[in-house]
Length: 160
Image (cartoon, rainbow, N blue to C red; front, side, top):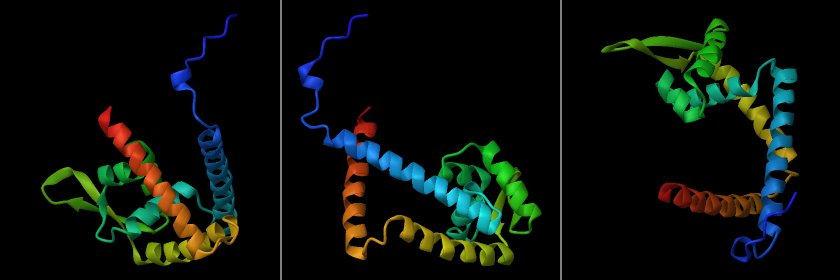
């Protein structure tokens, strides 16, 4: 089997961006896996449930299911199952949307808010531990660099 010829214009100047991307990917996977396990063991919950509760906590007037799906970048079907379980546990309410018989809005109950605040406080400690106890200035610098990268990525995506 022949290898394709290298195109010098496509070769990166440095392998460092590729190494950085791989390190970011690995770091994300490790942190996410650890958070999933800790949420399961400590709170008998899942990361997707935590994410739904977080989105609703930050939108306390509630969200339509389609808004929640869009915000979390998941399908309506995925959100529906999570909302069903959270509702069954008493953490959220479904309310009809005036003027739209098919849609409903979901929001956290007081029990859901209390539970989310407990989970979020612990989650914040865990993330801090997993990021090696970086000081505020270092976290801010890394966040700024990543935000710049996200902006560049958005410009590339918007042009396509």
